[in-house]
Length: 313
Image (cartoon, rainbow, N blue to C red; front, side):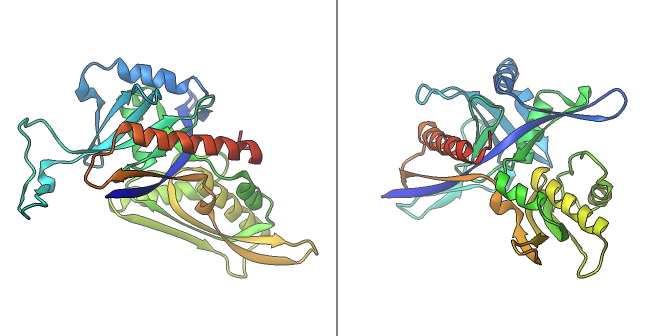
């Protein structure tokens, strides 16, 4: 029986962070040649063990792939399941359940996530056919495998957000609340400007539990100064653009056409650019690279159409 699979394809800008000799942070947004250089560098790694990175006690493996059809050069990074995860195989004909064993003791189950460049830019489209690997983990894998840490460099992914939504936050009279969730094991990236409040949040995160979710909320109620409202507004922008939060909400102070001031709660990540794609695979047949890449290619085409209309570039 054919099974219709629906998946979200998310789009990210890629940022290379580098610390200058004077200690200041410099950010460079990846350009169109970035992924060609990255793919070539990964392909040049002959020792496959050097393409394994352990992140938060989990092993991730990556490879560059260029199938015959569609001929899209891309990256696959995925979690490697340990044998200790107690994986089993089930015989649907007999109902017999047995441990999943391999003839080769080095073989493991892995769960790839597809990272596909958007040609003509440094952006990427990301789709996970199965269990997703978060973009922060993929960025950490790239940073480690490319050995960027000794040079004071780090790769980060920032969600591409609808510019109309960002303009709504920027154009507000301020904000009275901001709330966000983030993974407790993922650091907050460095920021520009005077948002030292995030340094405090990062200090708290770094001494807290190494797993789980960290929730942060700042709320003024009906108190607070204009400077306070401006600070929370800028905090909300960084939550939207920083690539570290996975849920966010902001209470904006807005002015209508008649000059009346009102408050409006806005879910930040509903405005991340996401294209939903679907494809069919028989539930008793294997999916393959071609099916997944065709779906990502359709999503990129739709994204380009949206970008032309909305000015995403």
